[in-house]
Figure (cartoon, rainbow, N blue to C red):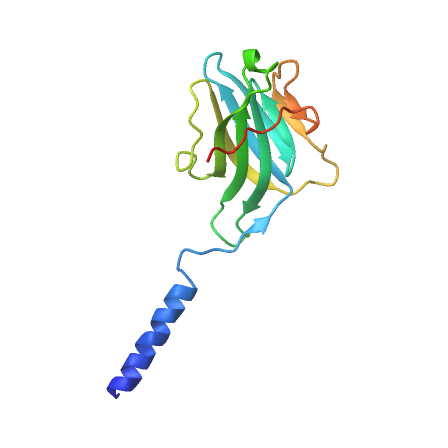
Length: 164
């Protein structure tokens, strides 16, 4: 082989490696995420099945599910959800002052990789899935307090402003 052919083949291999990273995987968008939450003070847990685009209230947290994706069946199981979580404490409800708690992707197989950091509450993804024909639109497992569960976007306090 000539030096030009070797250089050309190395260049082609480098471009292929850049264009298709080895760890990139195809994902499937789903319509529902199964989330679990815990109040660390009381040890009360709730499991929610939430539609993409819906907002859930747990304690003083508001959780909005923006997207949920899972790996195809032939791949290693993985689910990831993009969530925005903000908090409105009891004394702030009149002022409607909200504070960001979390915004990003959470992974079911690695909950510590991109975890929410909050002193009282913890939220994580269990799985992403599509709605089964006979299943209810949203379900809650556990003992929900008054006002917890799915919240109409018109009733939820506004998300906090993004600080520059």
